[in-house]
Image (cartoon, rainbow, N blue to C red; front, side, top):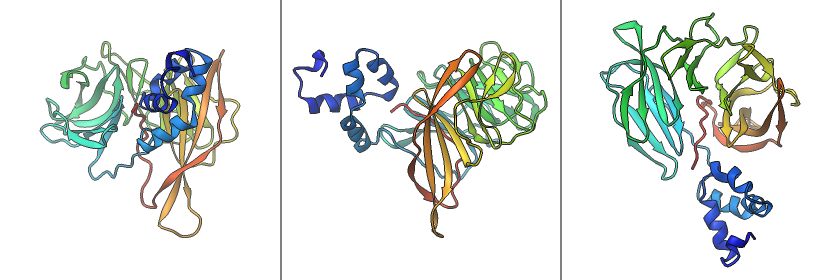
Length: 311
């Protein structure tokens, strides 16, 4: 037991640390070996499980929307063209949903992503689809503000944040701008691999590197210098998985996929494998952990969004 906790009963120490958001765990482990062993204690994991600190949330979508996570909250914003786009907020700490402030202008939402605790939403005026504009929701002040005017018409629907850009990925576009720079409104593009297919849930950014799961290539990362996709090395073949989703789990990549349950039941299984990632010179090396079953979901459900929250 670290000396700072030596006078406190061990069970109380476990309860204190279990309530600490996991995004602070790397910092705690770096304090000393004793803290590192303590934060990984099975007792802490048991307490977090009882408190629903590490949970999988299922959302049944009745109206089309985009979803973005910031800290412990998940924001979903309707794609519709109502006078003001509706936003709802799910707080993973309480399990409650509240209505957020509506946007300031009508739009058909194309994509959204979080950059520095602001939710950037790219949309078009329903009466003029050539007029692309951007709004940002400030999580701290709970207010909407206009973003820099995009220099070009940004296309695409799968939103990720990369180097302060909102990238609307799409496999059907040819050199059409799909990345919006939140600093000045300038635009760029990321071209997906032509010869391979991918799903909109199979993309995420970890430590400012974009990862995508391709049906044939498996797990790949985008080399922004050479503008090319490269395969993550040191992994067993990952090209036979069904309905894949990717997420950032405190610096590791969470790889989720669907698997048919044994028999002819009404459910299917969701499996997960954690993959550690290390940038080594011009490559990214992966270290896969043992895969495990997360749970079962109704057979007619499908993975549509994969978001990481810091509860």
